[in-house]
Image (cartoon, rainbow, N blue to C red; front, side, top):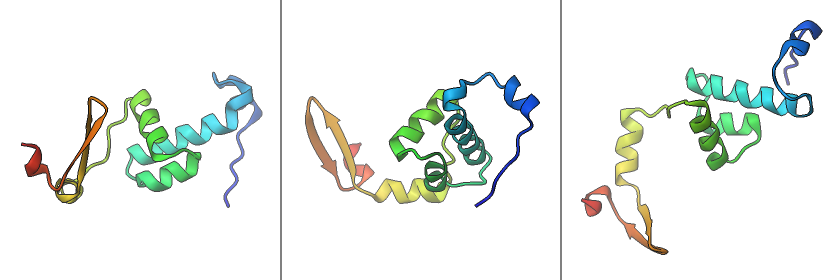
Length: 99
C-alpha cells in the first residue's frame, strides 16, 4: 500500500466536498491513470471502488474516451453481442450477424 501526503494548504484549496474527498480523489486518480494508459480499465475500477459500468459512466462524465486498440476491437468483433430492443434480447454470434 502507498500513502500520499497532501499539504493542508492544498487540501483546503481543493474545490471538492470534504465529506467525499477521499473517494473523489481516488476517482480522479483512477480516471487520470486510465486516460494516460498507466492503468487498464479493470485496475482503474478496482482503485476507485466502482463497477465497470459505474466507471464507464465516470469516464463519460469526465469526457475521457476509452483506451481501445485494434487488438481489442478485433477481439470484440468476434465475441457474442447482446442487443436489447423493445424489451427483448437478441444474441448475435458475431458482428457480421448485425449487418
